[in-house]
Length: 263
Image (cartoon, one colour):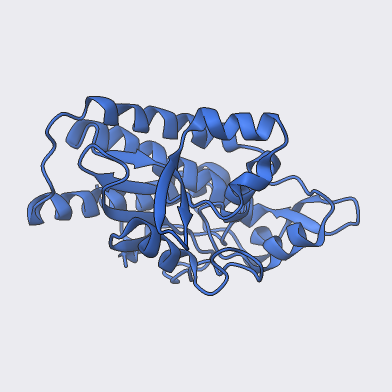
């Protein structure tokens, strides 16, 4: 299903509805991150308000990998179909969430910048733009799960967390159970530097990636959203988010935005 550009509504980029830890780093993530895939929340999931929502999608999608069977590496037709699904889901999420909140009208700049939550020092940590973007992100992943579960069962993962050692070049999966245990025991520092791409296409093994997609929702209709750049001191401080995915997963990496499609 395709939508006319005039019907597609857009909102500003989000980090995530994260709770402030009262640190300068949290405020820097708020100011610097341009990732509608909730990059700040993924670095420290303990601060995420809605992490459980997307985590449920991730667990469901990843479960299919164990019964994938003999999935074939995608040919040109299959790649084009997956690309079409990504674009359709981005457009649908954009349209549906904006329709729900604004009755079919695009949000204004003032609405996008509305502050919904501040930290103890009065610094904004959640804007309407971030909240809308988070909802669109979850809606897009639900759409992808529904469609790929039919067309490529066991051949994709949603928000799979990876740990990549830059020195040894070793890539490993972090299960949802392990992630939640780290959060429960206060060991979230062990999640620092891990990578969580939105959609990973594979042939039954999430460690053998074919292509990576990350959703980006911008406030201005048709605007391209830059990749999130990691701050100083981060394991990937010299590269951006897309470059980190490509290095660790050894696969083509694409952004997906309403109207713009896959780019």
